[in-house]
Amino acid sequence: MADLHIEDFHQDVARILVALYNRFPQPASLFVIDLIGEHEPDPFGVPAPRHSACFSAMLWLADEGFLRYADTIRQEAIDQACLTERAFTLLSAPDAERLQPHLPASVARQQASLAQRLRDALRSGASNEIFDAVQQCFRR
Image 1 (tube, helix red, strand yellow):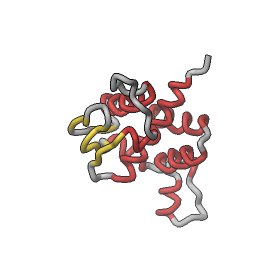
Image 2 (image 1 turned 180 degrees about the vertical axis):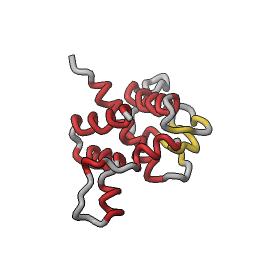
Image 3 (image 1 turned 120 degrees about the horizontal axis):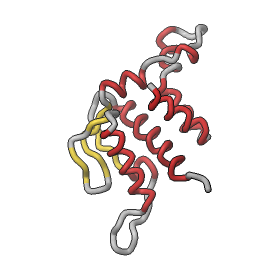
Image 4 (image 1 turned 90 degrees about the vertical axis):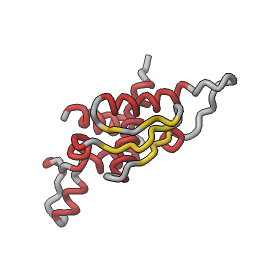
């Protein structure tokens, strides 16, 4: 049996980190619907499992020290979210193996960052690339 929820988790983590990196250092409200699209709640108003999983990924990242936030907006979003210093440093540091010496230093540094690797992985849609990039976040 495939662990599809783990693949979804890695995609959610990548989207969350990239969204906050793109806004850094400005705090932002991070809505589940903006990350994964709309998933209808059940007839009783209980959020869809996919929606709940993405929201839980946000809370987990906060618990693990990757982001901080001021409050939750129901189970729809986290409010005033921002990367921690640890996460910002992790995402912005260049990976020496990915540096391209033919590019100007500032461009090469940005292209070799973990943030760019996450962006590229999300753009490709390849679950293996997303998995590897997110796992690199957790290994550092």
